[in-house]
Image 1: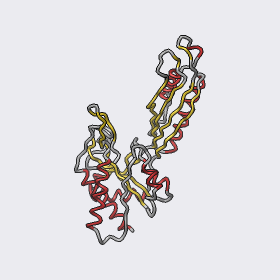
Image 2: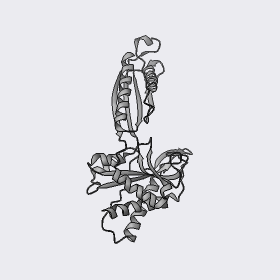
Image 3: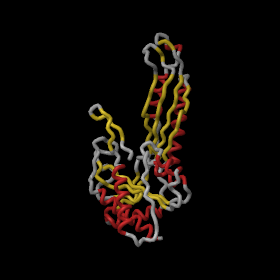
Image 4: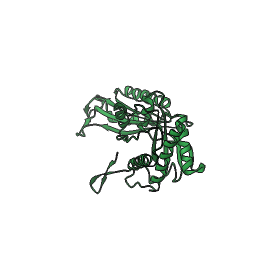
Length: 302
């Protein structure tokens, strides 16, 4: 489930460097234990195994297939990197950031490199845009980042002033309003610089992963479950993460759906998406027990 491709020894290998195999294992184990060991429970729950989180398309596909029908509360879980959460601790509410990825097509004017004054060099324009984006200052009291992640300009020949270019940008923001604020600042800067250099910037595409939309009742379920398994000292009430998660499409798509997302300490290192990633395997037991307690707590509360 969502293994990522890496070049290892000249070959493409698919590695679970984000822990999705662990998440599937914990949900499957918790579901089996509840079904076998708690036949007296009066209620029901649905175990969801969602692919394609890494490309931001899985939750939308699951919603389209009707996975939320009859669902009142939804809980997610993810191992956390060691930099965020140590083994033996868990967050009742993992507050993901909004992620916005977008690209611009930069259009200039081709010319001979011996006569550059007759053209508009998109290599220069994209370089200026990068500098302009890096000059944007954000409120230091709010969590937000802007990164240029891809630039292209020019064709195969080195004696042509390039007329086409592409620049791709990623924004992370602690909430959806701040994310849109940052996007508008970037969009204004990109278009202003392009115009000032006699070029144009056309927005090609914009992909958004929403920020956390958690609910206090759902958080309280997770809080109670974590305390039962790890004790008060093992509880982190809220953890703000710069990472994005398409899980938040679920509460966005269904009014009154209560949602929360557990961040599980696992000593996951060196970090998420590192091909050498590993974690403490005892985390599988802890995560399974927490998920069981979440379900028991939910059903017992009625």
